[in-house]
Image 1 (tube, rainbow, N blue to C red):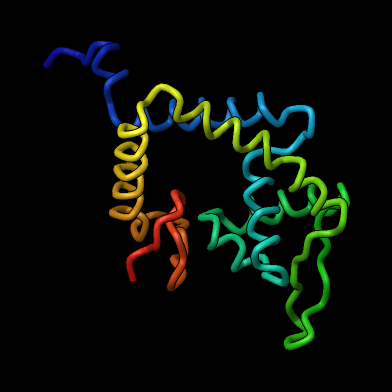
Image 2: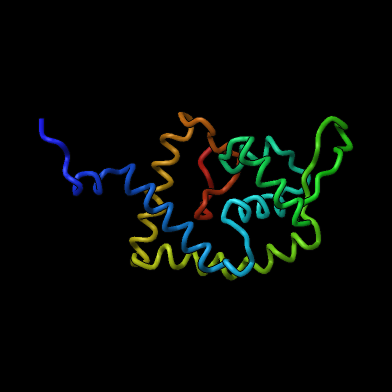
Length: 168
């Protein structure tokens, strides 16, 4: 059996998905570079804005991250003064996560760079293709989410990454 050519490698879905993710991260960092925040950190700050008091395990589930990665990123955000851990009132064994004032300012400062990065990621496509591309990505992620090591926890009534209501 002949070995696959490089063209065959470059057309493999896993290769293309990994490469697309690398490009998306690179574009985010180009747009937000001066602020020194990664796209994972941006995701955490965004979740904490909308869900103040979330604990680390729930945060990891909401972003589809493993707990150790979440812990390391939170440590960096806490050291930078952007996130604070506090003892939960309802269960003193838990630590709630909240944005600090500097964290809120950072998230506000990231609004425009994140918007530009998203626009750049979608820029090769027409408006119709953008909708189709995002829909296909959502379909793919939805089909395999439950079989991953760290599934994204779906929330009832939550919206998809494109803002459409998520099916229950």
